[in-house]
Length: 212
Image (cartoon, rainbow, N blue to C red; front, side):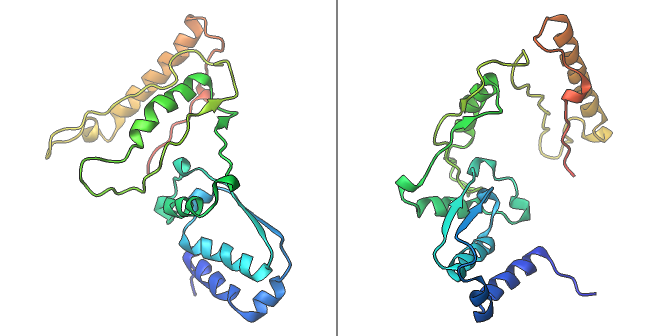
């Protein structure tokens, strides 16, 4: 069986959009193009968008995205594509949306304190493996009340051993780490019940994300 991968489809789409037949079919078909999550696109996908614009003719395009949310590098996403698009747009054509309607004030404050330092350009003289992402403006929260009491973020740190030594929890297949996390979740649920939090927590309030 012949197998076609996603990058094959991208390459074929670029080729197709260059054909006279496709351009004739698409001419005048679309007047507006909106691309959401633009921070997770790559160079070939931008070529597809540009090919559509060229084929359709007079097109107004909108790009929506946040480079700080680019998480699909492992699938070929290139945040530099987003940054280049910003650089090529006139300032009056940009609109920065810095107000979040999801985040609590406490968590927004944590973002504003923590991430500007994390995203600051590296000054250690080493090659930077990640495209630089500027923190251009503080997050503003539309919500004014924290629904859940307590600190917005808890850091449970793993102790990394010296070169050649096993990391903490590495020798037991991660069971100690899992037990520590479960104990922390249990403690948060208990605190919400005993300390008079505005809202009592329950297990369904928690999600655990695991790497492959």
